[in-house]
Image (tube, rainbow, N blue to C red; front, top):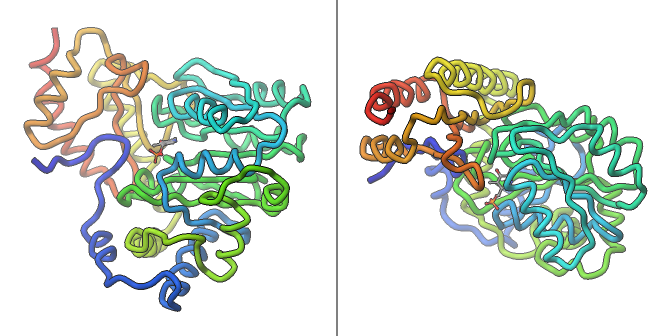
Length: 358
Ligand SMILES: *Cc1c(COP(=O)(O)O)cnc(C)c1O
């Protein structure tokens, strides 16, 4: 059965985006591709307020997450972990043979500027990784405040995952002074999986050129060289890039401020609904995500049973991720979703909840 997706990625894809993706194939060394590439990267630069290159990586987010550390860790990496994705990034860093330490916060809590300051003040690190919006917990760390602290350490490359926040909240790559800001497109962008985007600072590009063992597929120097010609090192997922072009045009037609406001309104509505149903909110107050909300189970609701019932009615529900599976459930409100979609979902859950509560 085709289910309406209420999981935080991949998310449902609009018919018009699928339509755009069915554009007849073109060769990636043809001028038609250069035109498409230029259009997409120009819009991404506007979205992120940068004139630095934004690379198109044919991979899921973890491809470019791995690539970023391979390009930018020369000495030792500080990985900040407060959930499944950020903690896995530490594991990925070590698997690349790089020196790295994990600095953890409780799941449900943010990474704080103080944590970052304390770690970097040791002088041991030349790079850090951070997940802005931990999709496993629904926590959005205070990126602007953290970025302020990072300005004290200009030689430390800041590599930030905004997989589930880019395009849903304002991210000003220039004002934040980040070195790498990356996202996969199957979350907040509302596209099928298989493409990641990645803005890179001049300082990071210069540093990458001096880093050994960066491999080929995610080598920033290869990306940069090709991007200057509106191209990619190897054959990209051209259909997805057609989809992204259409989706970006839709975002600008909606208006970025309207898009950000739509996400904030959906987040607000979802938080209230969860509490009205007698559940708690898992993420710490003040750090709750704009793109998904984690409910804390009340101990008397059989979430697996609820998921089954919702599934039979054509709605794919989420019952938590990683070590908090079952203790939490996540409600996404990102990409093309609207308040009306949430109302439809919540009406169904309200009907089903009495059947699964002790
Ligand atoms: C989904 C997600 C990832 C992993 O992305 P893949 O596309 O599966 O590689 C990484 N970070 C965050 C914050 C995510 O939400």
